[in-house]
Image (cartoon, rainbow, N blue to C red; front, top):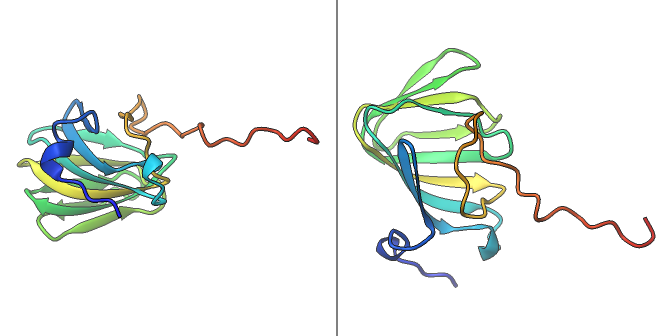
Amino acid sequence: MIVRKLQDIRKSDRNVKSKGWESARLLLKDDNMGFSFHVTTMYAGEELHMHYQNHLEAVLVLKGTGTIEDLGTGITHQLAPGVMYALNAHDQHIVRPETDILCACTFNPPVTGKEVHDENGAYPADISAAREPALAD
């Protein structure tokens, strides 16, 4: 069983900050759950371009308001407490928080903990799990 307190994670190296957001990563790859679990704040007034090419993500908005634009379809959705969005097709998107947005997020495959968005708005693929060739290969 894993039991962690959000307030402790926020004071540790599992709390990652980047431009426009902060993410407390409660479960990571090394926890062996098959997904990672984060409590993330996206800051008001930011425009966050993201495109998770190597991960699927589901997000539940707990507090705050804003919009998410699906760049593939051009459709914009309202974000408010109780709204969930899932990036099930590696969807390229922009989140525009009107107020600070607090949300709970899951990633598959799980992140290792230090990821921040690259120039494409993605987290890098975790290559640490790449298979070493067998002697017979």
